[in-house]
Image (cartoon, rainbow, N blue to C red):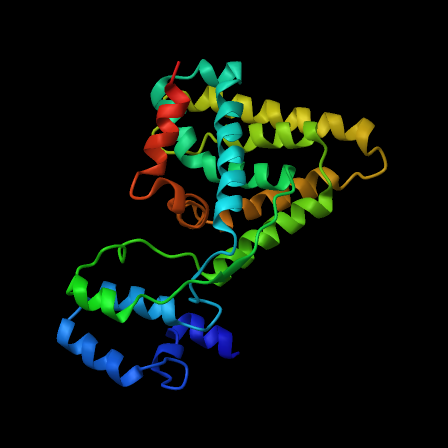
Length: 260
């Protein structure tokens, strides 16, 4: 019940003087700096100890970011290598990229068995905050939370429990990529037919691979629905912000996709 109350009523950790070191100094500096509400939210989120808003980062960022970057490159390459995807107008390709890169990236992590660990994000230095004199710096970006990372890991564990074959992953990626419900598509009817074709191919290969498991197709689609519980922003900040800095990841992906 306590976790549910914290979720709906807001975190109570930042108000607990025992959990926040130098609480008196923190409050004095906060009043002097006269930070905006959004900045105060960012700082309290980083110092929060509850699961909902506890800010985390990768435990081994160099190694994990390299592996994640390789998976992302292969994800974009998967899109580019689909002849049916290349037939779409550039605008539709970019729309599907924006909608589908994160779910396909998670599928890539699952397929390649990528595991990772996180640790608490370091709290912002008092001296740094004083020198910045209230500048917002990175406060506009949402930092990965422990709860968000746990949802991602739960999704990966569900796919690993299914033990999908490479063909199952390929057809499932196609079904996730060709989403006719993405707003603004010019070729939504064609994209809908591509999604149905991918789902049909997935169902057909299950017959020889798992002849006695008649509920496998439904379980795969049900598990795939959990892909959207992890927002692209969390993936960007957790795996790629240490690499790309202030750059826009979606713009980088668009350049990779449309490069000849």
